[in-house]
Length: 306
Ligand SMILES: [Mg+2]
Image (cartoon, rainbow, N blue to C red; front, side, top):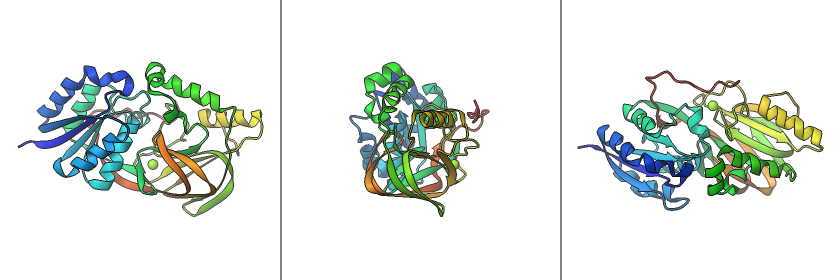
């Protein structure tokens, strides 16, 4: 008897890429010894709900879509079946998580790599009662991903995010927050903050810092002070894109981060809306995601400096 595999895919991700590959992916997974139950997501939230409903009936879950679809699946896996191995076949327009781990962009090859069966124990973020796979952020740019519509994302890919982000440079928010990162405390006015476990965010390679390790139990925490003039805006952009030094951008590594504010602050988790909060507790769940990753071929990890 084959093991049961739930294949949850977003048929709209990345220009509907899955359409040309679906039959072959299911064939590869079946040849790999799985009985495949395929579920095209019907709406936002459906990937999460489908896994929650079927967690007790399957041995494995494979997700195909963008980072948002993977976020839903991983959140549900962590809640309902944390030991279950998870496979990822990236199909979105910006796949930071998959690129960080050098998961194949060729969908059939990504499926072939899953059936090899090797597991990579990846860190996962806990965010209050939710989970995220690679980024929790607030402030400037964070509404870019979910405000950029799917048609625009499909047609322009990464450029759609950049265009939307550009518009926001003229309307920079400021939040007064208290941050505790493994006991190191800061308080002040910040325009942007991100807690990441990724070599890329928004397709940008230098933005999370250097020597990023996705299973070291630590996040990279980046906090951007509210700029007060265009020169400071430019300094911040140079720091984020090229790693230039500035006191306007603080970077630390931490396992546990709490952020408190008097006002509610809207968050984004893996590019999806993560609701507004006055208190967030973020914790690195070390090696808790059992991710299929083929480690038998040379891994071309993204170097932090190119
Ligand atoms: Mg890490």
